[in-house]
Amino acid sequence: MHHKTHRSVQFEITPVNRDIEKRWIQHAGLRSEDLLFVSRIHDSPHPGTRQYSRLLSGWVEKLGLDLVP
Image 1 (cartoon, one colour):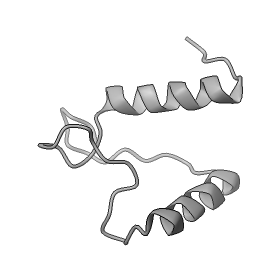
Image 2 (image 1 turned 180 degrees about the vertical axis):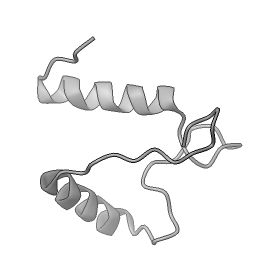
Image 3 (image 1 turned 120 degrees about the vertical axis):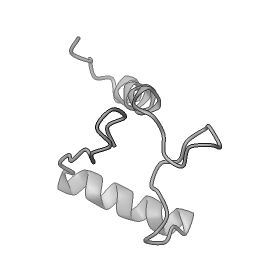
């Protein structure tokens, strides 16, 4: 969700990612009302854009890919 506008952010999930996320949801025992990613800050239920950026950067690094600046 955008912080300033409070509008949802839409993005595409590839079939491979969909399968991985499905397996994670089953492994973690998540329900439909649960968030896939949670915030490290207890006052906020979802992570902020900076935390998403750190997550993504970590995944990209582990995959051996380069981030485009």
